[in-house]
Image 1 (cartoon, rainbow, N blue to C red):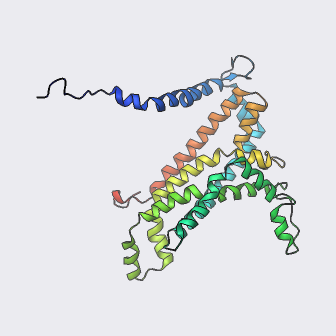
Image 2: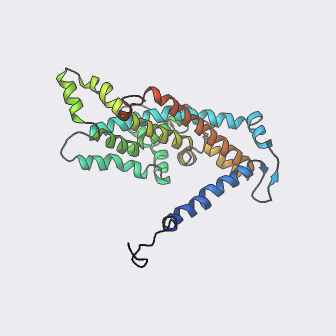
Length: 301
């Protein structure tokens, strides 16, 4: 039997000590602000005066009187429904290309992933605004063919499309995840199907997509949550215009909080956004049982 001196000192507090930086950050920077925001959502709070409890008044006003709430929510949902599938399709196609055995592939991967590292920056947003402006590069290119372009950002019919294009251009993070998933698919599955006469198209739909479905689910959830919170591009490039055609929900929330100093009202908007994101995420997970393939469950989603 080991003596007390040689016995190793063991205590659960050691683990909590190592976790303490994360725990402190979680409670002070995440949990406490969330609880405070929930309280503010039931108050009339302007940042300049003490909160005044008003109960459900903010929520009632949002759903019964606020026209901009429905407009910004509609635009945001439209943005999510269009941009997320396009981004995932682009990311998957690029991942399949980068999964090929080609000389210098590491260079191609770096060049293709680079836009995603800087795509959310203010500088790129300003550059995007100049590219699609009336005198931008897009119209300059069209002029070479005698085509007169328009102010893509200044046109209500095309402004949202420019933001969607920018988000789709930032496919790098999803592409890397897809690429990791593709490398986990056994080459023997493709070899066996090729022997049976399966074409590349059939292999894609019968092997690649089913085996990659858990990764698709993961990317779909992440991109859906991120797209609902899209703010920087709309704020810098269009400022919600023209004619509020790009008036995203997060932009509306920001203006209520920091331009109108209606922090209580903005907190209610934030919690409504959280619930909407939770509903969309729950729907995705619920429907995943019909299209996600798990090998460990015998192929049942």
